[in-house]
Image (cartoon, rainbow over all chains, first blue to last red; front, side):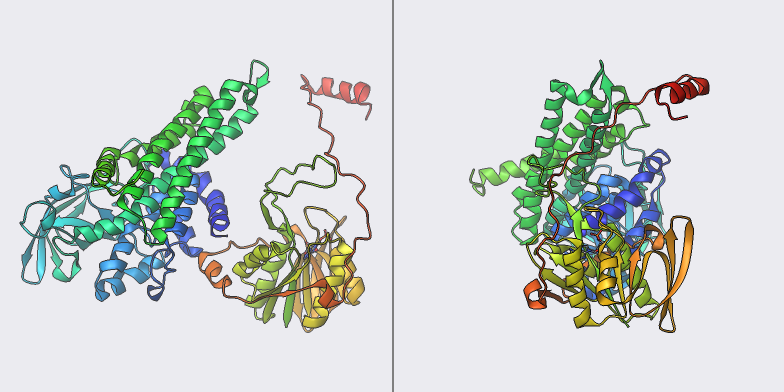
Length: 375
Length: 249
Ligand SMILES: Nc1ncnc2c1ncn2[C@@H]1O[C@H](COP(=O)(O)O)[C@@H](O)[C@H]1O
């Protein structure tokens, strides 16, 4: 029922405007209002803070369905009560931080961004260089962040910073920084290959003073964050890939059923039939893998290996399926009058975000070599 | 004032229906099923009456197999207060459904019973009318507007020549037309709440209703395929074809 409901909302409200939002680089914030009006903003926020406290599996379904209609909206949804920030706040935040942020996020009134990457530290979190130096009851922050999704609309940012001079991961923690804090600036929109409407931008900090109680993860606490992120590897990034790949196959199928070449419907050509079948096999394999991971995550049994296996497969599956969708639609697949080229562009970044597929392969191999995996 | 709404579980309107190979009916195995769209409108209208303070309780009723529970849960998630399933695996024809609904109405004593004008699977358009006949209550079919005041219902009906507005006394059976309202979305918090709302199960036997089919289906066939159209160069060619080929003018 959750799926039916969100699918209907997403197909009716989000899909029609998806192409224009992307073309105009305009974050579809009106969609967040629709989500909030129908109770889909506070999905992961605990009930005592006005949310619904839903599990990973439901969240994944919701993200998948939103992405099937509009991937940019799904990215923005990451800034509401369905995204990583509220989950981190709920899991490790102080009561004061929870009370301050969660109820508003549950209503979709407060938009939170999440900022991990730096020019020289993407997957390499241990190399975070943005510094926060304690001064009385405050931290003074200096440095910059890159590729922050939702930056241009966010009210509050969860930022990974070096809270302690200890080198490597041990010195890294996270702090909540509100928009408008003196010394904090959001940069110009960063134009990447796809997902043009997420308001992605760099963040700059120059002697930005933030109250010490805003520290949400103390130095050395990143393990905790990664545990939460493991769930997120299932809910966020690959769910969006799955949704977009589903849309690509759905639309490609509709197109090939209509189109005629050499006097016959495209679907009468066996070569094309096989291609469509391969796309479905790939898509369903990815879906099965991701759903299984989400079920494990919901039961608290997700291993880092499960998360990485699902992420890598679904990331790469979505590239193959969206690529094939272009191929079967020929020149129309390339045209921006059709959605196929957008699907292809939109999924590309997910194999880089949230840990590149290579980093995830490293951790898969590590688990294997450690003997934590029986084939 | 209590409102009852009837809910039929039907093949989803997006599904391309296929006739079973033996011609006994349409394929329903592995097919997406949903609430009959006119019943969604019925639920919506009842909820609006409740929100306006006219109605105090909305009860959704469905007759059919166990799977109808899922459709009733959707009615609960839309906002109905409770639900009743009259459970049976028998094939139900409109007369049988009307008898079951009458039995439920006798138990529940609603002031208003909102029924879809027709089910999109069999397109019978009979249940509401038969229910009115069986209960002896007043009826207003094909409603596109509904007002309740002073123990009366004022109903605007879609009729062939336009709109007719009638005033009927309560209790009454109202059947919904497409333009009565636009149903809301099922919201996530309401889906969660629906899980805890009461859903009671009755049986035709317990209600003392004989549901045996009175009509026999001889054969179900696909509609004949439409022939491909033709393009004409101009209006003159069209008139020529209409006159000499189709012989309709
Ligand atoms: N099995 C059923 N259970 C509950 N309501 C039904 C059932 N069959 C028909 N109805 C109601 O009767 C309306 C008209 O159906 P019909 O007369 O079959 O076209 C539907 O929109 C439903 O509101």
